[in-house]
Length: 111
Length: 112
Image (cartoon, rainbow over all chains, first blue to last red; front, side, top):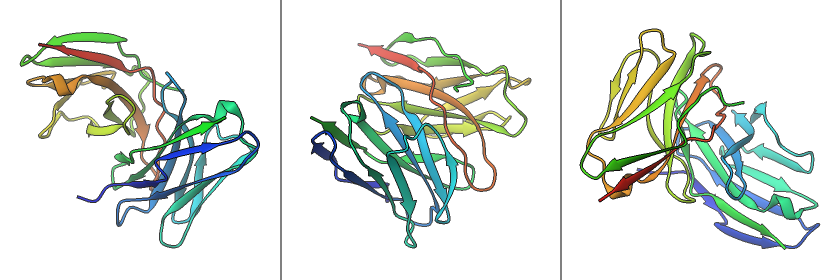
């Protein structure tokens, strides 16, 4: 079965640089979520989109923005990167009773 | 904020049933109980979910108490590959989206 695809899987950036993470949901899933998991921490909800509109927002820094496109894929844009942004970033998509299916994650390292 | 309480860790012998408890005493009527697990740094893996009835699938069984204030995830025959952090999450599904607040979960150690 098709799963959530995330790219890139690994990303290394310098402080103050910009990063873009991409997420391709499971076909026919129209809701996408982004989570951040710092080292030794539990996943934290960042933001979600339904039908290309932002549906909810969590603890997402103002330096981050995201959008969902007409083909339902989503991108998380991160600017002015800080050392503390180093984390795993997971994307998930959901179906009719809210089961979220997570991608493999993007590991972002900020040097 | 997470609305669930789970023990931080549990041990289970390989081949035995693993019973993972979760307290969610403030659960609302429209909130589902979802269980996920995370193996090392992989993406959280969906296991099972339920509203008020007990549920079973090929991976596990979910037992929800009648008052819905607690639940138990049962892995009937634990294997070494079931060693992971297990998260119990309660969340309402409305308007085609929800959001998950992950608590600290239970680290299940399956031992030979």
